[in-house]
Amino acid sequence: MSELEKILDKILKEKIEKVIPENIKEDISVFGIVGTYDSSNIQSDIPATNDDIIQEKEAYVNDTKLVGTIADNGAIEIIPSEEKQILPSGYHNGNGRILPIDITTLNNYKTCDSLADAILGDKEPYIELPYVESTGTQYIDTGVVPDGNTIIKIEFMKVGRVIDYERFFGVENQFSILRSKSTSSWEFRADKVYFSFTMDNEKKYLLEAGQGFLNLDSEQKGTYSYVPNTQNTMYLFYSNSADRYGIFRIYSCKIYDDKTLIRDFIPVKDIKGKICLYDKVNSKYYYNKGTGDFIAGEVI
Image (cartoon, rainbow, N blue to C red):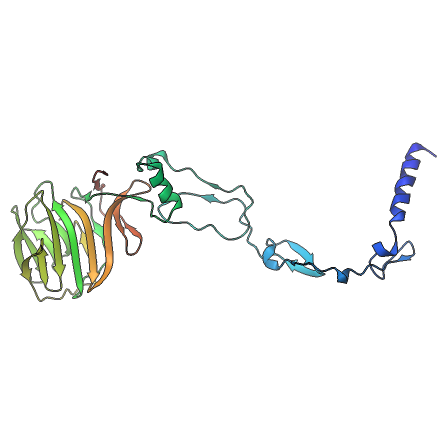
């Protein structure tokens, strides 16, 4: 007998020794040996379900065929953005990655803690600014259509050059403020009813208007009875009048529907360094709808 034959004979004897009834499934015959192994008695202590198996994969548990339902996401890539992102549920193969943030974005944060809060914490990823300033070509659409219940409270300062008939905010001729030609006099307009008041340049004011009154630094400047009748939304730094933008700084702006706060704007720089207003009521950024860019107040 050759060496190879000896090896094969040894392997055959070892295998045949294991061909016994206990190792053969019940009622199955192998080399004339009838099996006695009862697989139905084997049960998993914590059986898997379809939801534990990846889609298009199959498995058997306790003699039952299972077809997987878990989504196979493979390797996903996450691009940092100003919005919160939720990882998709399902299987991930471990090769996913979060792409790096542009280095210019990192420069927006004064400390590592502030960046970590923005990326990992519950805080929105923005840098709060003392104000945003327009240059005469920018405006914000608030998304609010003014009516008889509308009240606006806005902290602001008129800056820069004097512009004939420049607009501050509102819907043209319905609920708006504009400058009288080349003067320090300003007009509040509600349809054909309007009244005048004065404001100084480079002075910070708190203006409150709506529901028939206008106050400047808590001093009443006029009253009216007209109820705005429009489908247009209110603008800031502008009021739907062609080429009649204003140059202002806005420090904060709140808009109410009667007593309910519906907009709470603060000046911010988003995670990409874009200067805009952020509404704390709806957790939403409001960006320039005009041209050019706002000027950011210096972060202290």
